[in-house]
Length: 564
Image 1 (cartoon, rainbow, N blue to C red):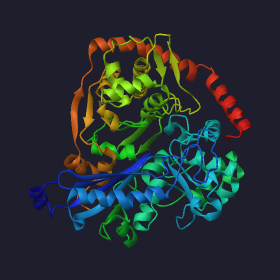
Image 2 (cartoon, rainbow, N blue to C red):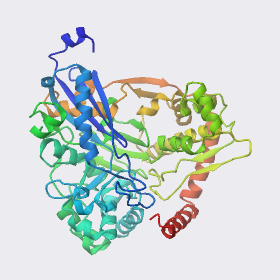
Image 3 (cartoon, rainbow, N blue to C red):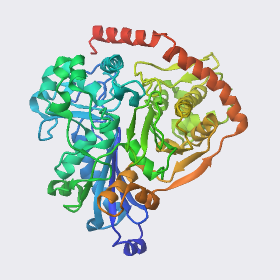
Image 4 (cartoon, rainbow, N blue to C red):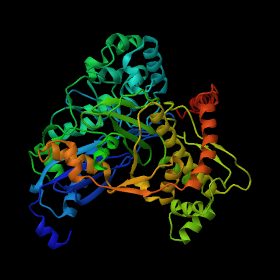
C-alpha cells in the first residue's frame, strides 16, 4: 500500500481472515467497509501432510493422511503479523478475526485442548495425531455406519445422500476405537481442527454449526442415538455424550475474545472479536456473493467442494450433507465434492512427465503444468482418444466410495503426456457435471456456477468446465476466497454488519460469465461424457468390484513387506 492510501485508510476498521488449507495457512487483512484485501501472507506447514511416516519415522499404512497441530499455531505466529505489515494498517484498526479449515479435519485432545500427539508417551502413535480431511483409511467403518443406518432406517441418513463418508467424524473416531483403544479412551474431546484453533485464539471451546451438521451427522437438534452407536460397537455408545457433544455456535457468531497469549502470537489487540469457526468451502460462498438460492460455488484446489444454498430441500444422491442454515441462515445448505482434482494433475506431473518434457518446459520458462496446458490447448475435443475417471483419491460425490480408483481408457503407443493431461482435466469436469445433474434430477435447480480457488488461473481448465457443463462460469474476484469469507464472518461477529448477507453485499465480489460454453465443443463433450458415464456406472454402480479387490490385494502385500 502506498503512502497516500495508508494515510487515507489509517482509521478504517479492518478484520483478519485465516484460511487453514491442506499444505499451508493464509492470512488476509480486509477493510470492513468494502472488502478490499489490503495485505496477505502465507505460511507453509513445517510437517506438510504425514502420509508415509510420523515425524519420528513410524511408518503409516496406505490411505492415511495426518498433520501436526503445532503447524497451525505457526500460521498465527507468522502469517498474521506478516499480513498486517503488508497491509500497512495499525493493529488497533483490527476489530475481529475469523478462521476456516479444511474439513473433516479432526483430532483427539485432553479436556484442556492439549492434542494427544503432544504427550511424550504418544508421539509415536499414529491415532494420536490430527486426521486430515483426506485420511481415507476409515472406509470400512464408514461402510458399517451406512449399512447399519440403512438397516435401522435412521432418518438422518437421507440428509447425506444415503452414504456416510470415511472422511467424517464418526468413521474416523470409530477407526481409532477399533485400532487403538488406548488412544480412544484417553481422548477426552474429539473435535474439529476448525474449533480447536478458535479455542486456542479465545480460550473458549465452541463447536461450529457447519462441521457439526456436515461432518458430525448433527440433524434436527441431535446426533445419532446411543443405541445406534452401541450397535456399531458397544464401546462407542457414549462417543457423543462423552467426547463429542458441546455447545454449537452459529456461523458469524461471536465465539469469544482474543486472549493475551493469542494476541502475542498474532500481533493483534487483545479482546477483539473471535468468530465461530467455519469450513473453507462453505465460508467461500458469501465471499463469492452466492447468497441467493441456486448459486453453486465450486472451490477448486487439491480437491473440489461444491456448495450451494437452496430454498428447496431435496434428496440429492451422494451429498456430503444437507443442513438447514449450514451455509446461510434460512436456506438449506448443500455440500458435494470431488476428492481429487488438483491432486490428480499434480500426481501426473510428478509421475508421468518425461525428462524431455521437463527440459522443454524449463527452456520455455514455464512450469510443467503451464507447458502441458499450452500443448493440450492446441487439441480438438476428443483428439487424444482418451477418457478417464477422476477417482485417484476415491469418489466423494455422488458415489461416496473412497476405495474406488482412477481409470484411463484409450491409451496407444502414440499417446503423449499432453493427451493424458488433457484427459485428466476433462475427467474432473465430467465429475462436476455428474454432481450438477444429480442436483437437477433431485429437483434442486442450479442457477449459476461460480468457480473459486487456485485452479481458476488455468484458462483451459475453466473453458473445459464451461463447455462440459454447458454453463457460463463466473469467477470469484479474490485469490483468497476462504480467507476473505472468514474475514467477512469476523466482521459480522464484531458487529460491523447485522448478518452475513449484508456483509456479502458490501464485501464480496464476483466476475460474472467470464467463460461461456462453445456450442460445437459442448456437443463434442456430450459424446465423451456419455462414455465417462458408462465407465462411471460400470465401476461405481454395476457390481464390478475390481477396484475394491485390487485395494485389498495392495493392503495385504503392504502388510507382508512391512510398510504397514
